[in-house]
Image: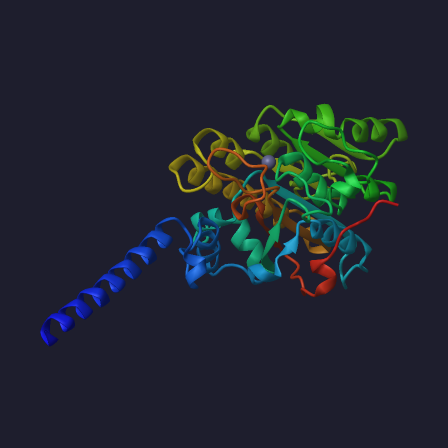
Length: 346
Ligand SMILES: [Zn+2]
C-alpha cells in the first residue's frame, strides 16, 4: 500500500515538472519570455551589439547625437576666430547617402578611409535620424535627413517630414554663410534635391546674387569630379570665389543605390558601395590637404549620412534606419547642449 502511494506521488510530481517545462517552452516559443524575466535578443539589440563591437565610435550609443549637430559644427566653425597663422575659413560636408552605421565595419581598417582618417583628426560619433517621437518625428528618408543637417532643425523647422516636398524658408548653412559673404556649393546627383526640395533656395540665390552654385550631376562620378575641381588649388592658381567655395556640400549615392537594389547591410554590392564612397571621400580630403594655400586655411571636415536602412528600404523608425554617424576633424566635447541641439522655427 505504502509503495503504491509513493509511486502515485512520484507520478504526480513528474507530471507537474513536465507541465512546467512544456509551459516554459511554449511561452518562450511564442515570445512571452519577458514574463519570465528573460528574452531573446531582438534584431535591434543585436544591431546595437554589433555597432559596439566595431570599437570605432567615440561616444556610447546612449549618448548619440541628433543629426542636427552638423549645422552647429559648421556654424560654430565659421563663428570661431581664425587660429594663429590662418587667414581663411573653409568647410566641406561630405554626405554618403544611406550609409548604415555598421557599414563602417567594412572600411575601418582601410588606409585610404575618409571616415577613419577624419576620426583620427577629431572623432566619430553615433548620431540619429528620424526626429523625436511625438514631437517632430520625420521619415528616415533622404530629404528630411539632409535638410535636418543643413538647417539644424527637425521637421517642425524645415517642414520636411518625408521625400517629395519642397523645403520652407528655413535657412541652410549655405544660405546663412552666403549672406555673410562666404561662397558655397551644393553638388548632388539625386534630382529631387534641386527639382523640388532646394529649388526655391537655388532661385533665391540667383535672384539675390548670393554666391552659391547649385549643381545637379548625372551620377557620383560627376559629383566627385566637380568637387575635386573645387578643392584642387595648385601653386599660383587663381580661382574665383565660386570656383573655390568656402562651404562645400555634396552627396555620394553609392550606398543608397546599392541598398535599394541589393539590400542595406551585409551583401557584396552594399559593402563595395560603402568602400567606394569612403575612398572617394578620402581622395577629396587629400586634395584639400594638397592645396597650395592649405597652410593658411582653417578647414572643418564633416562626413555623415542621412539615414540607415533595412532590407531594401528605409523611412521607418527601427534602429537600423535611425542609427547614423558623424565623423569630424574637430572633436566634439559632448554635453547636454549637443544632445538636445535643434534650431527652432521663429
Ligand atoms: Zn538617402
